[in-house]
Structures are given as structure tokens and as C-alpha cells.
Image 1 (tube, rainbow, N blue to C red):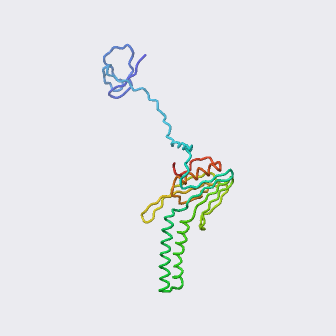
Image 2: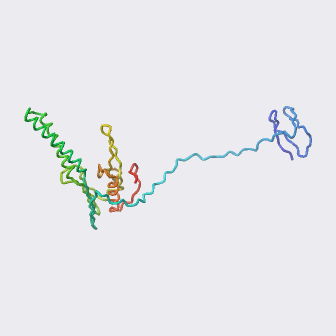
Image 3: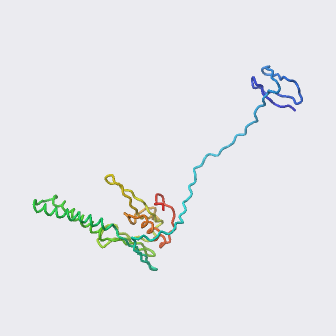
Length: 242
């Protein structure tokens, strides 16, 4: 048997017979003589390692085994076997008083202006806005939002002052409820409010209740309605994290 080595000058393969004791080995290719002890054997063949292409990380679903949300202080709750009623003050009363007061001041100013300089046409029509401001302030002061949850239906309304936003849905329409945090900026000032939203089985997303000042109230509404309709809580993109 023979061992293989390489010529340090030209790299040619050298066959070294076992048992041979000569001090020098002559390269048949270039004729260079090298001491036997200095010969370097060729490196063992390298077996290529196949590396699997990286795959995108799999995002695990977030566990939604959430603890029950305590009943918020501002919420009035009444429950019976056939119905769940949830009520709360729609807007802060202080805000309603301020808006209504501002509207009354504007209304008095408008009356005085009309008395001193009677207007006609579209100019007089613009003077209706103080009345609208007073109406809005009155609604903020007096109105309470009411969510009525029955076995097969959901009804949302505000009163006693008539406003927009009343709605009714069938329980079978809902796929999932969730809370959305909404950020609004006006004249450089940022405010945060919360919305109770629903994903319908059609894939459409609708806002059930808007302008909630408290995340605790929004989260409690979500949990209470889902429990009543036996909807399993699952993650929704961009929902408020508890």
C-alpha cells in the first residue's frame, strides 16, 4: 500500500510507498526533491453541507385567555336571563356645560347683532350655528348611551336628546368584537379615544360605539357582549392589547 502526498513546489500528487526509508522524495512532475518528513498530505475531500434556505418565522397566535375585566365605575349594569343592559354617560357633563354655555353666549351676541344690523339672505342663515352648538351641548349634558344585548340581537342608542349613531344588529352577523385605540390630532394637540368595533361574518368591520374615554369601559363592553353571544375571543389585527 502507498500513502498520498503533494509536492510543495508544484502541488503534483506523490505516491509514498509504505516502508520506504529514503530521506528525500523526488517529484516526477517538476523534479524537486523534498524531505519525506515535510511532505504535506492533500486535505481530505470536503463533503458539501447543504444548508436549508431560511424560512420566515412562524408567528404564533397570541393566547386570548384573558382575565375578566372589572365592571367600570361609570357603567350602569342590569342583567336578566333574557337581556343585558349597559348604560353610561355619553360625554363628560362638564364638557356639555361648557359647549352649551358657549353656544348661549354666541346666540345672545347674534340676537344683538341682528337687532342692531338686520341681515338678509344667506348671512342670516349663517346665524343658525349658535342654536346647533346649544343643541350639541345639551346632548352632551343629558344623553346616556345604552347598549341592549339580547340573545339574538344588539341595539345601541343614545338619549333623551336625539342624535346620530343609533344602530341595531343581529347576533348572527358578528364574527368577532374588539377594541381599537384611535389617535386624533387637532391644532397640534393629540387626543386618544377608544372604539368598540366588530368584524362581521361578511369580512366588513363596523364601529359599534365610538369616542369612549376609558379603555376599561371599551374592553368590558367587548367581553360582556362576546360572552352573551358566545363568541370565542380571538386576535384581531391592530386591536388594543390588554
